[in-house]
Image (cartoon, rainbow, N blue to C red; front, side):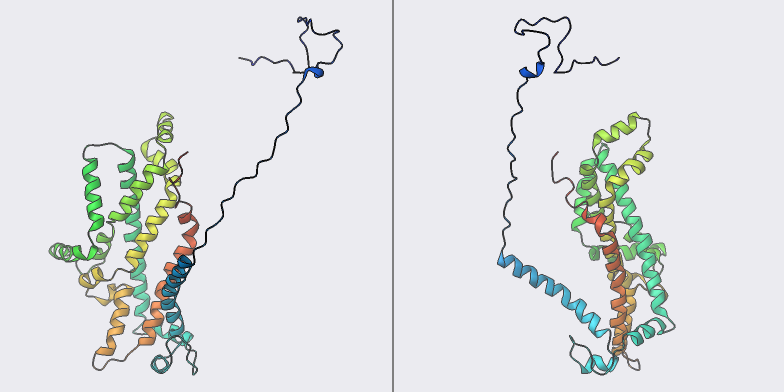
Length: 327
């Protein structure tokens, strides 16, 4: 249906007579009203409040967080003798041994550090990646689908978040021991797949980040649930997915107690257990102290986490304020 054309405000209709006009040749522009002038309103800018106390507290927290990292970087440049003879927060005047420590770290004990690094990457990729995938699927399903027992599941998830992982380590070890899975990579990977906090995070994020109207529109267009999830929901959930992934990565990368009770073979040790075994050599008769290699290995251990935070920071920060503004 065509849209009717409206006459221009400056033109008069041919069949319309006007008693107030003296002639048809008069310009109709005389009846126009002059546009009112608009006063430009300057937006009100609220002044920033500065608190000296908060600034000092922030500075103290920053110093408290950076001092261990600074100590680690400085002492990674020292030899074994330099660690014992120099000040901890300053370099050794005798020798800069960072490159020598790096070579010894990768070659000591037939290069077992590389094996520990590979084991840690395996546990993180399979364990943390699987935990993030399961948390995303479960959180999306709990947020967007109604089913009987949904509140019971919510109560179980909240209760699981409150239970520390160390409290479940011994029961998990007994169960895996009966199944014959101890001293295998599965004894570390399978428990890492369960992340109650990641599930709760993705549950709440999915409820706020994905409008129900968008899902209904996709279903009306004939899209299935899997296609709707991967094509529509996953891009909207990317900030929450990255946040859950970073959290699971840190937990799995720094996991210590579970591999300690599950693994006996040094070939399956992660970096946390392997570096601790090097550190305990000083207390063993006939063994040499390799504190310089422990410190250098610890520095190498934190670099992948720092790189992951820097690379994924923009995805992570983009979702911090999701759901905070009501549209």
